[in-house]
Length: 418
Image (cartoon, rainbow, N blue to C red; front, side, top):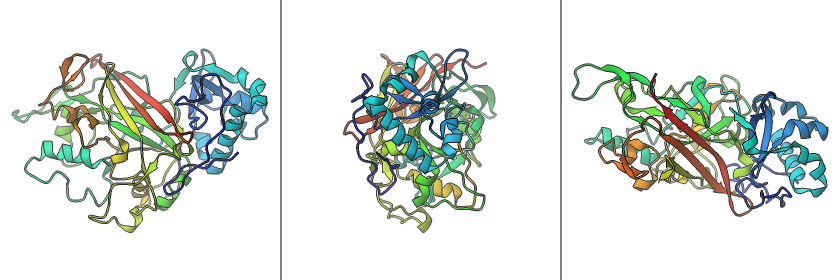
């Protein structure tokens, strides 16, 4: 059985067969998903795994036992070597793993390499090269514009001509479950004459989707939208933590810096593009104005992915990724249109995902309308994050088997400033 990565304009792979792994069939981690991660047990080296149901499958063990010629790619502390191997290897490995998990005759080979996911430690799945964060939601950008420029048009003049973005800090991208220390920096309230230094008082989250580069490109080479799937390995959940007071003071004229660079959290599981074959959907209209030629896409280029924002155990928002104006293929094309190269492990975020309704806003800045309209969570009114708060982002998408797959969640807890 073969599978192909889901790409804009293509229907993706046929539905896989039923798995023999107990409890996995019909779950968000069935054989139509098979996300990759890196795990370790106490005293053992990290290595690559696939998730099936509530089990992790140690690919280094089963590949060596099955004498797979790519086994060395899995006895690694990151996914980078596997991601760099390219789509042909990604496809063949996915077909091989699907066969192992659906063929009863493979049970004796596979079962010794399975372990409950809660019995292992999940690590950062890939080494981040460069990190770029975009601003691709028209609804989020319009909300921010209305808050901070109430007497002007919500969107700046270039917003519908190009995917706006900025370069972040790869060294502070961390895996889900990592605590986040409240950042300090300069803050200046509108009524103050001079800035002050101290802990951020307007700490926020941004519910995003992240995309991970597998195959690099050469400096001077432009990656076309049609080549998105040739270079992109998969998708992660992403929370781009934001210190809104630090950001507001520093971002004119060059944009985000310390207000963003202190922490970005990604999921421990990377969903391969092939698992999203049933999730591709049409973008909102991009004809007013029409996009330039290098940003044109052929066929469905958006993704129908639902997000839940959970604050201290309560769902406070459900942003829909399908409402995003700019597609991941367009963001990648724009990143490289000037000849900038891609490296294996490069990560780009979509920017905050927000929909048209209040309960679809992907940041507390929007949910509280800049702190002026508190919302309720865990039985009390809230605006921005407090010390001890725990935020979890959950993701789901249509699966090839007809149900929904569950993408890796993103969790972080706020610690006091140091």
